[in-house]
Length: 103
Image 1: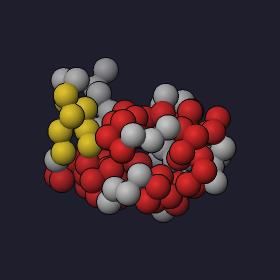
Image 2: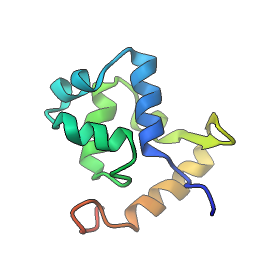
Image 3: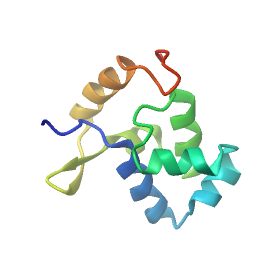
């Protein structure tokens, strides 16, 4: 099985740790339900809506580019802008949790 180009949950956990923020902090800053943030952090929702990603990145005070550029390669973080374009195309080509396409 080929690894995902982008692991949203890992990126969310990485930036929360970097910023010293909890899921409750993200909830208060974004208005998203804590249970939804938990599902995002554990990859139960793999392709959130773009607006959700923007809210979370803003709450973490990180650019959308930096948030999306964090990738997993052999268990290590790596920011690779070349992979970002592939990730965005992959994310936009898949249905979000409601079964509709986000663009």
